[in-house]
Length: 410
Ligand code: NAP
Ligand code: MG
Image: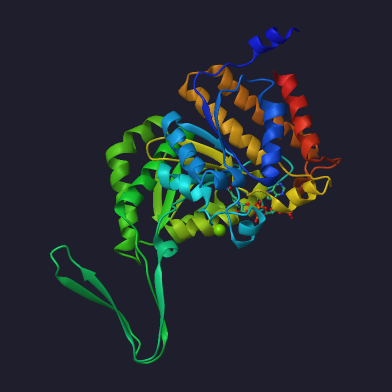
């Protein structure tokens, strides 16, 4: 076939995807995925932002802000894992300053909620045998103990909550009188605006995915704080989403957090589970390990205005990258990064009524899962699979094996 004919056959795009490149091993996988699985099939239109740490440092992190603003403009982004600098990275990359986490910066600009969903394949069974479908965790990413004030108090001290009203008057609430012994206190807060954004992101995503939404808090014990979460969700649901949920045939279900946990364990899965900040932190690690592997977990940031940013849930896999730099073979799992691409391409296709692009995303996901189910996988999965006669592939050969499956489908 002539080059022009091949190009003609490629899937065309109308609106660019915001592409955020990243660091270390995932940056290597990023290029392989593009070269083998995307560019041969899609005439990729992307607005490229290099969020690799070197370029973030060169631009004083402006590139991260620019990439988030481009996401607001175009509506869909795909992001590679990035290094969050710490003291060791300051020396390694000779940084001008210890930049904030790019994900934190992007989340701040998009004002979004992160949804994490395991990718389920045959041969890698969830630890909980009745879970048949993936469980998506939506974690509220503002406030509570993550923006707390705390103190240790000595015997004889007294702690009070002082509220200064808008008119200057004061209200004091006794927290505890430590006259009989030392102890600890903690002050936490949240803001209605953030809880409302969280609720809308969850309702929007449930509609987008056509899945039930579950939410749990401890409103019986925390009659003001957790009750506020419950009330805000209920009000927004009634006023803005109830009829849409009914039309989509999905349900919003609220219960106490302990009841939700019990029901999740006995469910067959398939729901979106909205969690307060701490619950989401803890439960997402339980869900990801119970479903098999961090390398099989996708992540999407959804803004209340309906902007989507897709990525893998894991980091830059530093240990594998150092092996790669030494010329040693790596067997790094690219599935979550591939699904970040397919998530973004599918969403772009849906927004642009580009059916070929939507179908392509489905085919690439199918080819990826089929590759694993046919016994070809990376080392992290070959260690936990129940399949027999498996072949453990290196990072590149796994992607090449997916390409072979994909070519059969195109
Ligand atoms: P990590 O990259 O998630 O990797 C931790 C370990 O998990 C790896 O050493 C590996 O275990 C296993 N693993 C994770 N992803 C894998 C994959 N795709 N295939 C196979 N194994 C995988 O976490 P980290 O090493 O603690 O962090 C590295 C860097 O990532 C840090 O600079 C951190 O700031 C950054 N990070 C970024 C994001 C993000 O951008 N969203 C998220 C988290 C961390 P074995 O070594 O046992 O093989
Ligand atoms: Mg955690």
